[in-house]
Image (cartoon, rainbow, N blue to C red; front, side):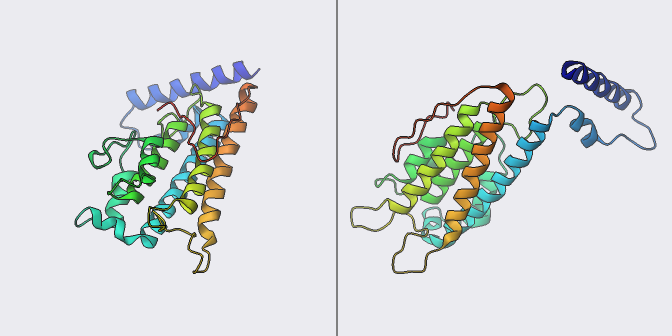
Length: 234
């Protein structure tokens, strides 16, 4: 029954597409967003919503980290928070920057916590995080009927966000100062917004992983090594 329904949706979508091609001068053109929705399953729509929320949370994290660590912007003359947002969130697909030695995903995350790195640590961290999340969604902004997400990548990304939160709150330089300031300053009031941000991101990625598992009736391997980022297969 599901197969017949899927086929009927495909034929309907093809019919609408033909109408768009051969009748471009129609007074009331067809809404392309409605056409797109015909090619999506319920899980595809959930996935699209999850990725949009992840992007919103990651943008919020970027702003908070730069406000907490304004010195990081000084590593590139004339750079602003808005410019960094544009570099990361307006660029589609893979994020590759010369100033990070072309490191992506977990490699960029590790660079952010490398004591010998003298560049913009917030930029390295956010480039790594956003790239890792995009990888878990197959580098696509939207999912469609015949797309298939990898539940292990989604699950690994959730565990990596846990590791990221841990390392952000614990990693110090040789003098004992935190490499990046977040809610890890004992002498200051704790900013629980960081904890909430990471908690929401972890929950979204876990939810998507187990949603995909339910769709395909498969499982995930749970291997968490303390403070070590799991592979994402970038």
